[in-house]
Amino acid sequence: MINSFIKVAALAITIQAFIGCNSSTKNENPQTTTSETQKTTYKNRHVMTKSEQDSLTPDQVLQELKDGNERFNSGNFTQREHSEEIRKVATGGQFPKAMVLSCLDSRVPVEDVFDQGIGDVFVGRVAGNFINTDLLGSMEFACKVAGAKLIIVMGHQHCGAIKGAIDDVHLGNITSMLANIKPAIEMSKNFEGEKSSKNEAFVKLVAQNNIKNTIAQIRAKSEILKEMETKAEIKIVGVFYILRTGKLEFID
Image 1: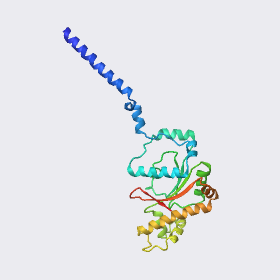
Image 2 (image 1 turned 45 degrees about the vertical axis):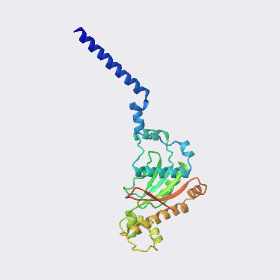
Image 3 (image 1 turned 60 degrees about the vertical axis):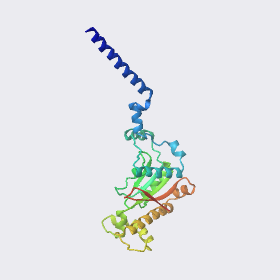
Image 4 (image 1 turned 120 degrees about the vertical axis):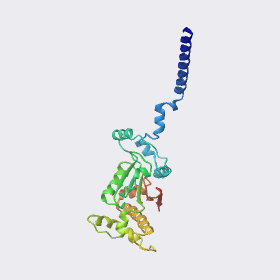
């Protein structure tokens, strides 16, 4: 009886020592702790600060967004802890690095396309990604007041607004909205082929010309943004988003 008790006690001591040894080893390697695993899972808890925004050049911001689109297409998203980011942005102000003018289309998730988080980009949206006074004022605020270094005008494949303008749709306020896209149709008049909304190649050309026209209108109608671009304080670029692939084509 006594021998059995001694054996059990010895076994218990051995097990306890083994557990203690493993616990010690785990504590010596912080990568295996729960908190560190959480930090690895959430790759980016960071929100842009003013000093970081100030240090960026327009070309650096453009490259960051290009890199973000590569991550979007590879599936290697930056995982973010949004609840923490929201609290930081709410108390620390906002210092986005770019302004994106996009179409209203729900298939174009702007922040996801560029793999950007809360507080990283201003986004303005209107069907057909054209410019008007309100959006120009928003861009001037984004760049001149809030310090954004890049304006992206982003159109996309299979745009309903572009097709509606081509088809000369008349329906309520949509009619006057589509009138903003008509200059891009005129710019595409030398297209060789069927000039209809059923021709994907023609729709794409009109969408690309609409991006070019929007950029020209920004420069023509905003002295503030034109001057900032001339001084290389900002950059204005156009991109065409391919719905099928998630990739971007940059418009010269």
